[in-house]
Length: 279
Image (cartoon, rainbow, N blue to C red; front, side, top):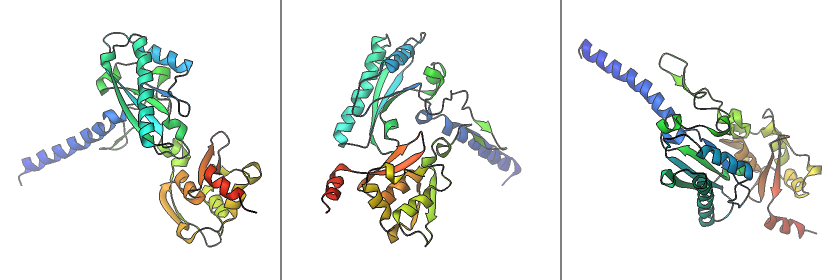
């Protein structure tokens, strides 16, 4: 191989490194939403505040650009019903935009129904409004200053160089924004015998605590006293909230209090009846 050929291949490798990092950060799927509209459980009705925010977004100066409205639902309920609800949510946002003067031909509707996010289902009941390409995103205003989950605008998330050939986006990781999404991998010590002890060990240093059983449903006392199954002595790698769900079991839902950073396991209604039949 000649020296010129080696130089050419080295130049191609460096170019790939730079363009590869940049491309990964600017794909359509990674564009920050201009605004996210959140809905109540099983609802497709916008709040007055969101109606006003969406209407302000519609008042962008010409030329106007294409927008994609992606409706989401959580994973509760039948899949077919959720798909229809996600579409109705997106159409409700579309209607507000059109009523505020945005050209209907520039609006696209998409859906992502039945998204599994234990402990964060409320965040899945939404519609994301995004520009249909990166160039359009640069020319569109962001409502309320940026993405609601991070508060960052596109300028805040421009890639930073951290090495000769490395670039990163200056944003907090998902685990930093939501510690319940931290990946955990652990083996419980033999001193851990019960589900309650396993939960206490799991949550140590996470910043989260179990709810006081005295302030919870009586069924929680029964669950925490049960022996830890041998098959659950080793967990992960899984998100922390999923590990909690494994320990709670299929008869319970994980309930999150993000204000006080408390976690609990709430028995599902059909199993509560079984527990209530005990003498």
